[in-house]
Length: 405
Image (tube, rainbow, N blue to C red; front, top):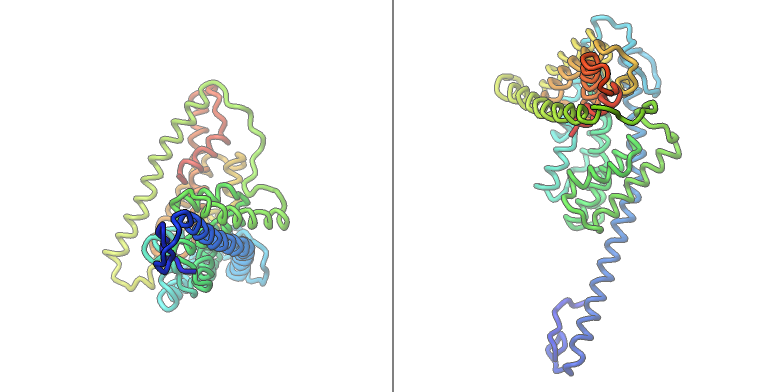
């Protein structure tokens, strides 16, 4: 339909028209535009529903692929079961496993796509802001494979970042295939990313909020509805297949008493400052690789993996995803000294490895470090002030949340 504005008293061809008919034709044109807009909105919602299904499937495939690589590299067996690499019997040879994984990831980044480096979310933000939400098709395939190799060979990362990046990449790809606008591609990219997170953690609401904050940058219904639909679809499929058990189980906790709430607030502020230091440490190590390592960046992931291997040899719990470390900190299943050592070594291996440009997520490492240090801080406060009402488990939860934000 011709979108030429209709002036009062004439048709779109400029022919004379009764004055009273001008507003009528304008109303008809507005209705036509609304109908077209509604059709596009329905199309985006339909695609977002499909992205919700894809996000769940991508999460399952990646987790099984990580399990396969972990079993092959640490135990020499062919199994897709999600395994714990810390019970290996490799001795000192375990240091070579992450290095081998780093070599493979470096080669994939150089000859496949440089976009697979990093944990995925900053790259997705850059794509939205700079490249009109267009992600190359090969990233959709190479990102999860490189992340599975990195994590499966002992990398101290989480699977959630690559899953989010993969969902976002597929959303962008669908948007390019269907010939959508840059705004619609951004919505589809955010929908795929939210679906990936919801499929991993079973948290549809926080997944939508994360996508809005980091990728959408707006709160309009046209954007929120498709993202919420994709997130709810992925979370619903996870509920049907895996049940309602939370990924980080915690026992019942009584309401805080005494000085507990002010102390938790103070701990949150301190961990917020610590979060700034953690981020700057990653940038400092990145600058070291950029300015002082003369080898091609293809070799950097293998160099960073040396720290992963050494830390994994000294503290095997630092190897791999190890969501159970977070549950152990939240449930007080480990001594505080063990949690302190775990937090330090996990931070060291994660910082060096991430700064070297390998592939993997940051949520699980930050959750591990934050919950462990939070439990240690809560235990220290409780030792000094036994009647303050602080619960070590709540302190672990505060540390986990504050360090991530």
